[in-house]
Length: 171
Length: 66
Image (cartoon, rainbow over all chains, first blue to last red):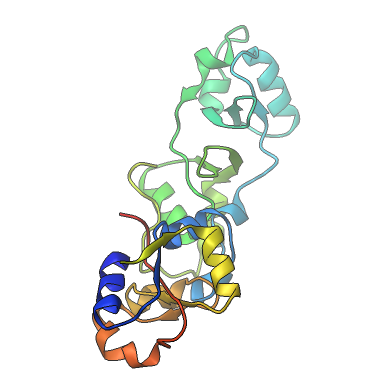
């Protein structure tokens, strides 16, 4: 759309025309402020729990379970040394054998969601797809936090649908 | 032909007085737009072109590169 707009402006005689090719999506992904009705609405990043336990893929599952339980969590996010999400340990994975490596027990490659997604869209998606939790990550895969469905639904209460859906199929 | 710019260049140009124009439909602009941007949806661009300053650089954007 922007290339067509630029072409039309040029045809109308405008001389200095630039196109921000990466567009609004790039701006939102960078976490920069916006203006408009949604700018004050909660987004996925606002509700994502930053205190979720994390672990590496080579840790012993029993150790991670103990740590998670001590923190009153029944989930943990598996990350690499750069905090990039590798997998998810939900209650059912955490209940596996103590001596398994995390990499053997985890649910690999979980769907991840960007911080700018409006909480209403996140809540609806999690309900529709029966997701108990969803890792929120930056565009390069680094963990922001874990969004819990119950908290997303609570926070979304009263929010209206947005014109543009921000969860892409690739996510 | 339009010059392609990135986010950093956009911020510098806006600081220097460039006009920032969102060409998406008005309802999408109303929900979220870049600070300082004005709405001139593609469909209304010709009709609204008189509102755009011809003596200042113009930056247009939409949703993404697709």
